[in-house]
Length: 151
Image (cartoon, rainbow, N blue to C red; front, side):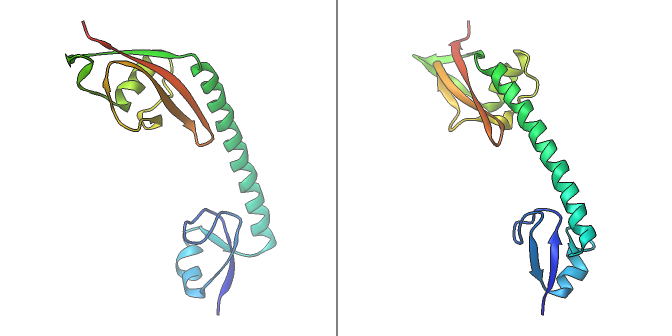
């Protein structure tokens, strides 16, 4: 026997908000309903979910617009980071996402955080590098990073 519920939040093992799910009555009664994760299927629950989805969509669109605006302003950004060199073009240490994010913030983009910087590996040599900045799940922008020898 199972009970039909309307999911109010995304749950990895069950589905996305707005999905109709079938679960055992004890799971619904003891966990999903008291936690506010799901509701029994009623017309009021459907209206509440529609309102909640409209609010979430508006917030998502606002965040996407802000990310696109930031990406446009970051389009031609160039960052220079000076680092110590041990021999040739090899750095003493490496340049990581935190250092790149701080350098971008100094340029006037305080919204950029280290977890937005997409580096396969830390930069370990002098030169010019194209670094991707993930501003939103749907928006990324490439920033030119110059690593020069510290004087």
